[in-house]
Image (cartoon, rainbow, N blue to C red; front, side):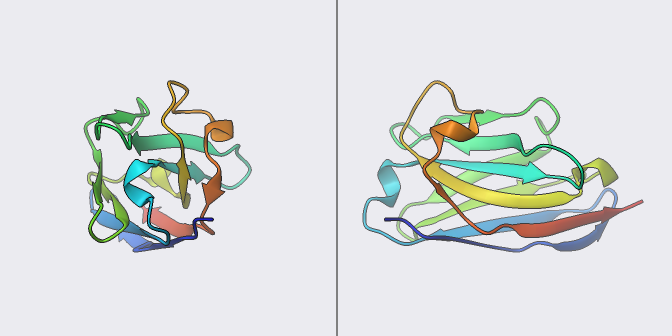
Length: 124
């Protein structure tokens, strides 16, 4: 069992930055693929980014490529999402997730564990 707790959300102006953190319980954190998804009001949850457990390769949605960076610190059982050049359309609840390494990194079904989410609001 893995528990995930996100933090770092808040209100920021367009063009600003935020760093989200996701603290995980469990001794096998380093082996998990870790992902970030987001859900805006009235929309489906969508993939944002992930980092693999085996080789730390990273993958991003086209909408955040070049602006967001995912990273992990296995010693702290924590994964981060650095978000720069934020836009109003980035406003959403951001959730952290964990699963086994797979090619289907952008599918919610690939992830077993989920956090409760943290709100990110970007004002124009």
